[in-house]
Length: 164
Picture 1 (tube, rainbow, N blue to C red):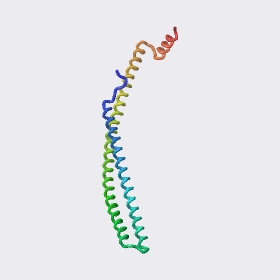
Picture 2: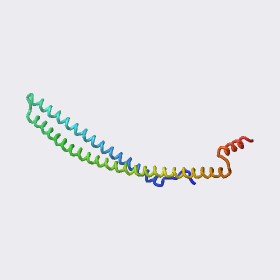
Picture 3: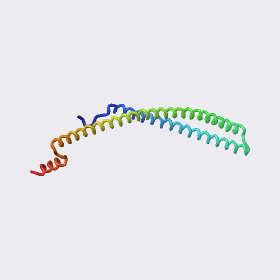
Picture 4: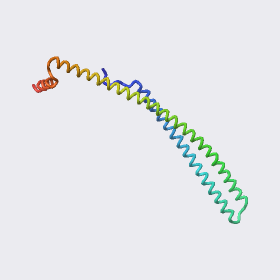
């Protein structure tokens, strides 16, 4: 009898672990994209604020109306960019949420395989313990039939080992 039986679904467990790792990497990438888009939106909003400040400063002094108009046109352009970036962020967040759900599902599937492996291992250990107990009971029965105690047999074996 082999001392260790292999888990029959070990390949499937490795596949499920790999799938979980891939889903986790995909979620991390989706979250990085969301963060990058949020940073870009923040930069657009900051540029929009600076543009308005520059237009305001320009209007305090003697100015050319076409220059101020260009500042405001540029500010409106930045506002449209910010709105489109918000829409992109919402879409990326939906994608990230979908990736999170996929990761949760992959994790659940992997946990199922791990539970099966634990149950398999526990059943195999119980089988080994049962066989060991059966052997011990058989030895004890044999000793009892011969009228010997296990301690006296152990002492006799020690004496035999000491003799050259």
